[in-house]
Image 1 (cartoon, one colour):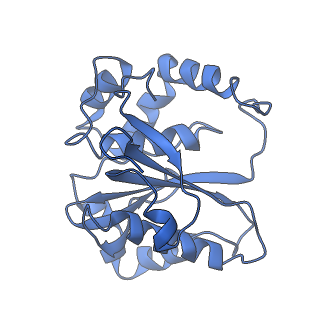
Image 2 (cartoon, rainbow, N blue to C red; image 1 turned 90 degrees about the horizontal axis):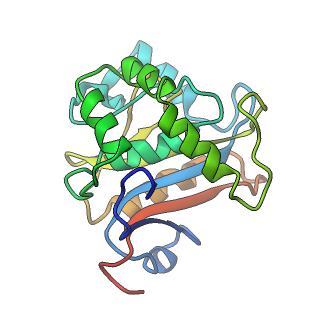
Length: 219
């Protein structure tokens, strides 16, 4: 994230739990929450059933009608974490002062494109794929190659114009989870993360992280 031009004071931190006392430990402000959850087969632990119902009936849960929401489709295999990061940053440019670099140039170039066009532009961007590959190999576990099947998926939650949006490049568009504000976004996103976990109570492989300004407030 920092190599792509995000200032050093912004960082990704672990969320140790979704209860108020543990959420209170996070440095503020928190501008995005990212959930990693296990994928399951059809009718499993996803919100796709909700999205499909919305498509054919009430479209109020889909956030694509708000042009202020930056959203891209995912066309790159095994890149959902990178896309969740971009969604988190791109929807908070009023708070995050991006430095000159690839990400700032990419967001400037893509701001008037459709979600599909942004996804295609990312697919053609060698800089971000190279950075993604480099960072993946610095981890403590072996990085899978691009074609390896994966069973976990990242989604981002952001606040935009008083609405909590779930941003998942595999979905039809942004999904609205109701009203929120910058002060309650963390708690509201935690509520949706709990809904994911409740769909598969025996599963332990959930992880939550937050994009926060670590320099603005001490623990």
